[in-house]
Length: 231
Ligand code: APR
Image (cartoon, rainbow, N blue to C red; front, side):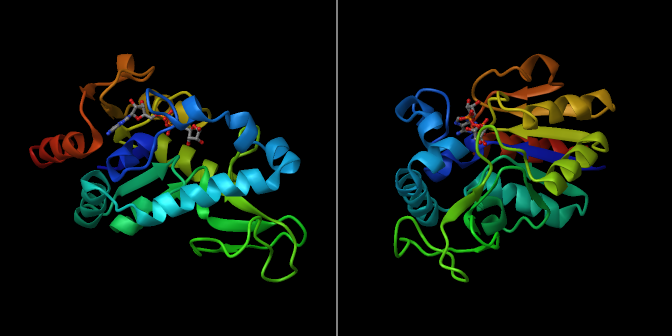
């Protein structure tokens, strides 16, 4: 049985990483148009890097939670489990998941606007803001997808392929507001997959879910694991 998981910021909430929407969401405090668009970066790279520097420090201090770990255990127990994540925090990989598609990039990747090189830079805190390319000294940008930008082609193609071939599609901790990620559950459903949603709130996915687990990710994934062990 091919199990495909789509995760959003909610799966990292219990690790202490704020989500974007909902009552304590980041977009309630900050305007994404000032921090998460190419125009914002062009306007004020220092401000954008101060925000990403803060997020990198927060993520570096965070630990994967039980939900991340359950997915890594399920991947070890069943070789056909894949995670597609909208998150840029790398917590799935730190929990031990190997088959992870990062739709929106990673805060640990930087890309040079001068020479185009991309590489992992996990220095916390960054030695200077904005950080400079290790090869050419040019201005670096975070290796994440901003609003208005195309998603990495390979990751998106892989995500569609996995979703279209899923037998079971589990959606954890996403408000399903942002496309194309939010389309993936419908791609899976249209190809006959069973749809399970884990989220303490209802979302646009809820009416289409075969099973709605109205719980936080950790306890919700515990319940999903019990369901899987019973079939
Ligand atoms: N466990 C599970 N789900 C939770 C938890 C929790 N402990 N806490 C909150 N949630 C749910 C919320 O109910 C909400 O549906 O997680 C979801 C978080 O939604 P968003 O903050 O919108 O995050 P996400 O869906 O991942 O956003 C998608 O938007 O800002 C862009 O690029 C950014 O990847 C992000 C994309």
